[in-house]
Length: 341
Image (cartoon, rainbow, N blue to C red; front, side):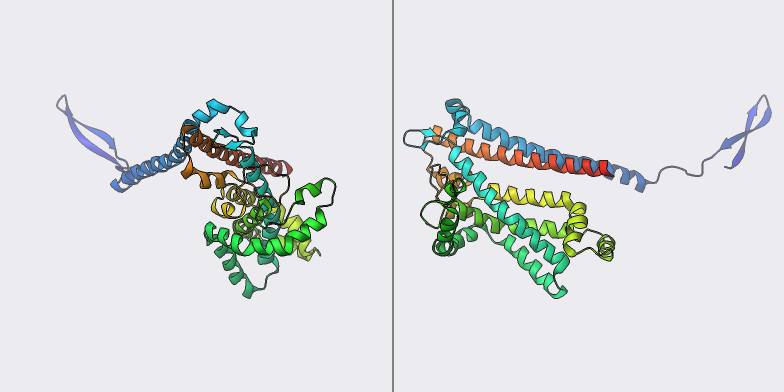
């Protein structure tokens, strides 16, 4: 700090007055500009975040308004009613809800183990020369349009499934006392099981990509330490890799489930589009998305249109509940990990 003396006149006498000056000086214009840019960027990103909530709220409100007539006419009975007769204006959502949940369950039952195996092979067992082409092939499966899957399922997979696979499944499992009811019926190729298998092929690339990425985040030192202690590959995966990446694995599974719940065109081609509740997985059925795709342009009358909008509202709520449950599961896993630590 420097001190200067300034002459001042008081009572005809010169008095030296000290004055302090700061070394920092005024704020440079560049720093002032950067401060305002930070504030503007913060509000811009905040606006984007609130835009997402606004869009979700707008979708929910528009679906609720569009389905108001159906809600007033049927109430909660719309959910468990199996009737769907546009001529008599009698509508129920149980068959599409059942088809959506069953096909998604089949897709995850098949897709999750296969995706886990592929991701495990790519990260732990695959030779170096095979990792890139196999990973690229998996990613290309995700880029195929869903209508291509539907056409392939209808013209290629369904005839093969009807001729070679369905008779074996019906013969092997149809005779069991309780579970056999799920596999009875004539082999017709299309149906809920066919739709579930096509969906499993569609969700495999998404789940595999997420699992592979999170498996690669495991520090090599952890795996090498386990191998050094004599652990096998399966023990390393089960006791090191999965505990380290379980939150990411659950997130990838939920991503695939969200895709399965909302898939439209592929399911429409192969599910049979029949509004009747059947116990057998071999029988034709319907899903919410396929019902909307097939009947939205043919909806004549306000009640028919409102019933379809209510189907969309139910699918929105199902997806929201699934995502909320997955988030709760992830938070619980993180809490347990913190408590264990």
